[in-house]
Image (cartoon, rainbow, N blue to C red; front, side, top):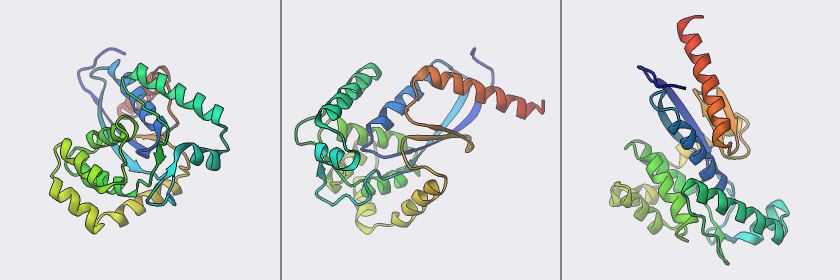
Length: 227
């Protein structure tokens, strides 16, 4: 699609968890597609909370044990899936560093921090920092010190970030948002909602995104012109 004189506003809600590798892949595939369509859309992204493991204890759980218990994955299946993710990441410029002893962790604190960061226009930047902390830097994104450091690294105030985590001021907001997306039948992530009505499940590859975005642009343009 060629550039246009006027970009179409495109609002995207991404229901996601910070320990979901396919959420990283899906978002980067979307960005790859959008990069081929300069000037077509004026994009606003809002990350919505989803916990893959809402009952995860504070100490977390060893990744392979967790996958075996939750999905019935064999060691061979898990290894093959992780290798596939590493390859996807490499192609998209993201480093997945899977290692022996890697642990899944609770992410409710991370979602509270992301909710707060939205008010400063830094939600996506913080989301990517949290993805990198967990998948690339072997950090525990349930650890308040790690979360505060990530917030500070993207330009947020460390003292305020610590206070947000300490007093739980956004707990109810995050729970409310989680219930909203569950009511919209989101039970797996990533899930993308464009213009609040077009739902795209899973980590689609960039050619699929390009086709979808072209269709949305055509439909929205026709609706705006009344044709």
